[in-house]
Length: 479
Image 1 (cartoon, rainbow, N blue to C red):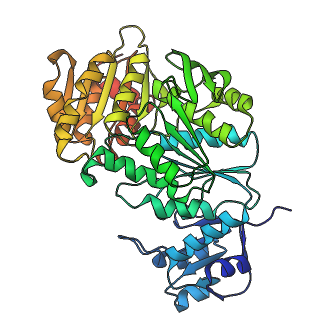
Image 2: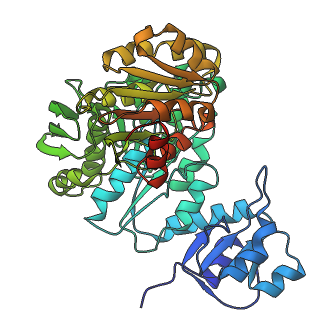
Image 3: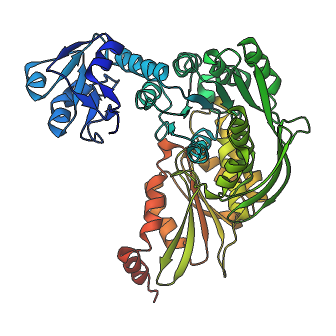
């Protein structure tokens, strides 16, 4: 018989809450009634724009095992069991802390300016073949996402991987102390969220907070190629790290790239991981993925897991949604490829995505097309950072650029006329222009910050392969 994730007695003991409505067991934990599954424990979080208490009655009627609340009323009590606490976020944190304490898992915390989610998902895949593995869902890396992810960790977990993010100083420290990682990885430090920092060095210090919760004698894993390596190493040492593993191309890297063959749909890698030679194939293309794979294998080594099995599993990696997913779109006139990088963007990830576009091979008379929206939260140097994309666009051999947003306008104006596809103020306005331009054989990469709303452009492009897309093309006079 499968052990329940939580019993009512365990939740009461963890949160110090008052039980109303009898005993129960929960198979999951949710803070969103829209995605809640029957048997979940619903936690009514009060956010800036929404109060979860408004959805308690609906969650219980939908099948929630119970609800943690701080503002109970008669309608809630009539709908199902409650756990009454003073503050629901504090209760969720307490539940996460209890889950962390009861599990024997070797826990990893992952942060960095770029590559957090992809690295976390890859670690989930390669470690799950070696033991029961639990990881954060999606990008649940903030003040509620981290404790929620912890609270969902089963008691028999062998490996736990938690993503930790921030956009202000001081955010990572309490999350790291909640996770208490045995190994902490910083993928890289770049000029991201500069609207909230005075320098990239401040960003490095904020990322270095990941070591504040590191277990004494734990392992810090750092990018040896990053200019802030020494600064982060000093922070790790001061936090009590027992071992530091570096990764990169630098000759002194512990997890060192020896040779790589970058291909359109994969990469073939030879590396030395803490003295052990390893050769493997990465099924997700891109040099940035290669570099992150070194960090992944450094984590595997730190956890004393099987390095050879992990290397074999690299061939099964898949890009997370919106972070490099590739789609072949079949239309009546022929096929084209969409690279979905629409989840988010900053100068480093944009350059990496453009480099990956450069590796792609259009077919026939196809072209490499970059569809890019504003990169947000870059501070006073935002315009210069957008204009700076002209160099990676040229280096990647991108044929056409479709751009939207006030900052991307400055880049678009700086491009040679031959590379100017179209510009619009918003992604919605850009959609029709892009729809008219895409042709069979093209490779189209779509990327921008979340606020730039590039996701709908991806959906529009994928839709050109259905009946509506056929109708659109026929209306263009094509047959």
